[in-house]
Image (cartoon, rainbow, N blue to C red; front, side):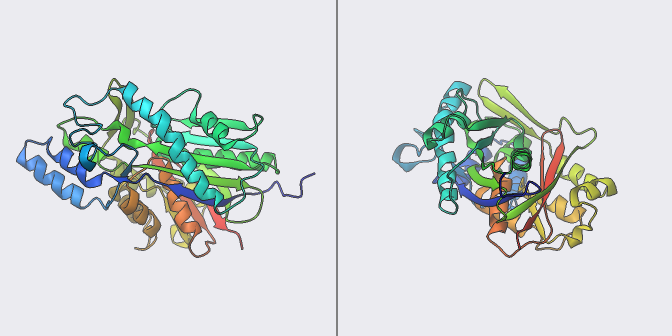
Length: 361
């Protein structure tokens, strides 16, 4: 029998990686050029300036003469943007590479020998064999390693991936689960003259995060998960696969609906395990945008510094879909011990999912 207890699972460490190409300012200029109405352009400038994002990183190659992907010679330089096939060809090469960079950052912190399970979350591309299989092969893992690929769940997929790892470890105490979230959101730029989708696109960047989850008591203990969907919100966040990539619809109503849900006592009890929000000393909230973080902070009446980790990740990387929550957890893991933490993410549905966590004494 294993010496480990089957009662708890732990995030022992988290490694993160982003590509070297900062595309934030270039993409802002590209998007603004699509707005011909002066009032819309003025609103766009105001919203982009207060987005709380300083950098977004992309796997897209640097264009001619060191230019961005929207400059001459870049991936998005032509009047008609690349088709889905070209975008998926890039995904098939770049997603495993970026994922492996995050795994190497994880390996620098913990021993990755004896991996028994691999859980990968990604919603920004498709390839078969899947990136779970590609990564397992490149890592030289034994063919008996069990793999799971979580796709198209969006920004809360990290919760599903870590929740799955928790279930695996609690049922098999000797399991060593490698969890990876890798997202290449910048592969899906859409040419549109409408301000709402342009502003939504300007939040997303590329990133990957890897975690080791085991029964070894170090790092963060993974507590009780929770999941719910908000009534009459299923159309507010959508992805559609088109001939020119994946088109995202992110309604401006989302922050308001989140704030409305957070004042519901039943939702608050589910998210905090019955504790008052002010008693939680560690908040890992998916950095889906400044307005979403503001909605969470105001809806739960949190102190100003409660979401500092989430705001820092947003500023440095933008919204990296499922990888974002892992970046926030990595930042908290490197900080002071947390006695009562809550991880929370939102995504298509409109769904809210999360789990409790705490530092190992």
